[in-house]
Image (tube, rainbow, N blue to C red; front, side):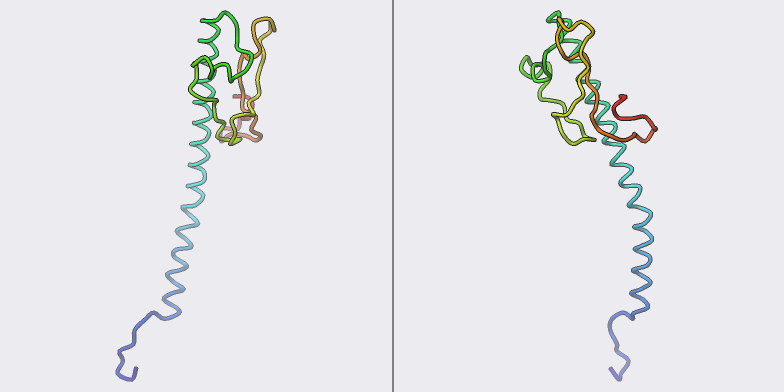
Length: 126
């Protein structure tokens, strides 16, 4: 090392690089997580729209609403039970029955997820 052929980085250079990386990550990570949440909210809206449309089609064909969501799958109105991306389950939907119970049990569905969406509305209100 007497010849001046030193290799490697100094501690100061490493600290500068690490602080720049930390700054970049502190800007990127919050945007990533808010993007993931927006995608989950859009997926939830799409699941609700698809399921409600299947309920309407079932009623138009059968003259009554189904007794369970599984009935929509069994009669091929849906491929599978809808997935709630916020609650991360497919068996926790809040089911709204029709006003006349003689015409089935599932009039509409809502998410059971707690909390509020990015627009300030509650997930259960969708």
